[in-house]
Length: 121
Length: 121
Image 1 (tube, rainbow over the protein chains, first blue to last red):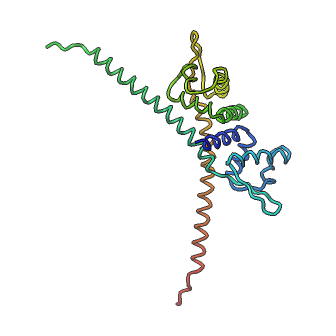
Image 2 (cartoon, one colour):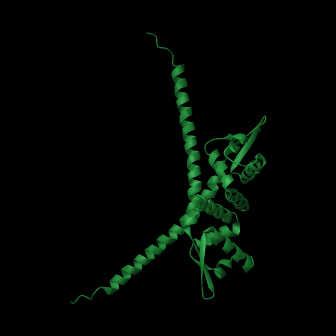
Image 3 (cartoon, rainbow over the protein chains, first blue to last red):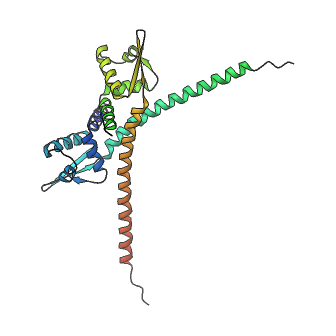
């Protein structure tokens, strides 16, 4: 459980930055070298590498250096873990709304039954 | 777009803390007063209030003070926005896998056709 919490902490924290989200977006299209990744960003390479490191520590991406080229790729497991957490809570909230709706409906029905004129016999 | 990015920054950042995620979890079961919220947490009330404030600023929850009681409730829009971002990227990644799979299949078929013995006429 502790590990799960720490992983989620890191994944959500990594996703809280627009440059890191943009890196994740680009890697969803396929693995890229650090220099390919840096192309659309107007930031110095050391800054980009810091973001890459944060993303690696969060488990959202991994990288491998072959020769002089470091290639990054997405690691879907961490993305799925964040989605699972959010989805679980949206479901809990929606189930609560459904229960409330059902309760209101049943109250309306009871109210209607109460208002029915008593048939003369 | 800028607002969307800022909202996502705040929402993901707010979810990067286990106490704040636990507050969101509890509010998914229904609105709660700050003192009700504080019950399972072994932290001082001012610390809890700080977390509540961060969650409010992120748009994930809202609170209202009536008399001396501040009641917090979930605001599903921000939760849906984070889910939409993650879901969109999981889909992009899965579509890429599907394209790769289709490409490998077509290569296999081509390879098989090439290996077919030439029929004698």
